[in-house]
Image: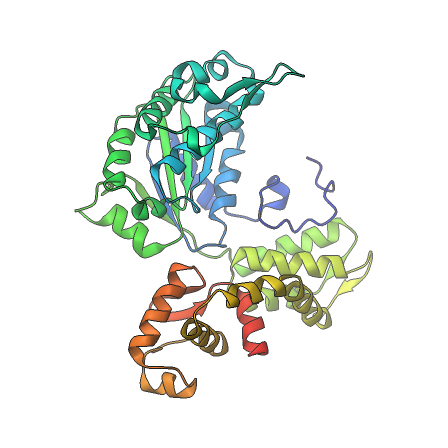
Length: 379
């Protein structure tokens, strides 16, 4: 894709191509090295730091595209093995459909339990994956067939499963043991287990009592270094005939603690506010921030409306504090007129389960920086 083919180069939420991807050279090299040495990887990183885009970036590298089939599955919203199997099968089929190879054509021959949903388009004659979740009658059987299919591929497969810690909360028991057994039997398929909840992922892969113990090489992500991101942002502005002051980018980076998604969102808005041959200066920051929050305000109000009163109070207190410590202490409770310490503990548990609050080393913050900003100013 041509470098200038996208009007706004600060792409948010998806991977386009190398020119729009900042750095991660060491991480890409490390990930490819593990894959080429046949090692599964547990990629553990907070959400919005760029792990998904890193995986797609790795998949787009020539040596990977040439020698492997690649599949990406996001299981964040799943709650059962049936849902997992459904997304797994669909991701494989959608990736293979354009290939028109012998291997792609035998998808429904090997995965016979899904054949009920295999239909031909009456207009084009093309096969379609017209399968609903209700068609997964025997998920373990379908899972066996999927693994058999991957292992029979004409070249090795790489399967990236995002938010992998989700399997620990499935309604069925022993899913970790079931998947570990099947993955352990694979000889030609490499797995990337990506997850954002560090304590759950670490326990899953580092606890001797867990089925996935020592089954993958651990890998973490740190924020992209500020100086590298500054150079990246300046280049994208200059390539399109716009200019930006270095201190603007440094302010944005600091504002979001280096979290890539939020930085990109802000830079996307700043770019749109800057005319051709114009300089983007500090005075545009507040307008950009307000514009982004305004587009999300109805979503934020909906989130609050679905929270219990005590959860709202604790969420608002953490937002006002920015980075909150000792949230069950008498001082914190008094400062924000909160209920008892036990009520705060119950509220924070619910907020973390909803991914509204994140916690690192005893420090709590509202996960969405823009949401936190809105809460702190509105309440």
